[in-house]
Image (cartoon, rainbow, N blue to C red):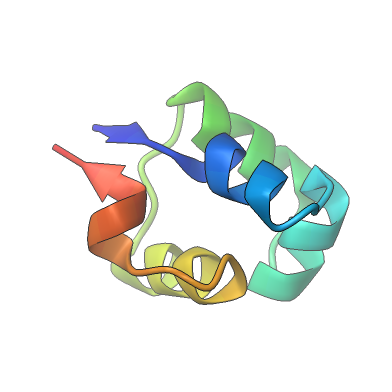
Length: 62
């Protein structure tokens, strides 16, 4: 699975720490997601997409 988290995070002018706070996770989780080392649960994918003002489909691709 690939993602565009870093791209959308930059568009929203958010740090990894800020995105983590908005999504309710630790910064390390965001780091691992951006690096493709961690596949999120549906709930986490939803929370990250919501924090980045986009959809799961825009953010993640299989």
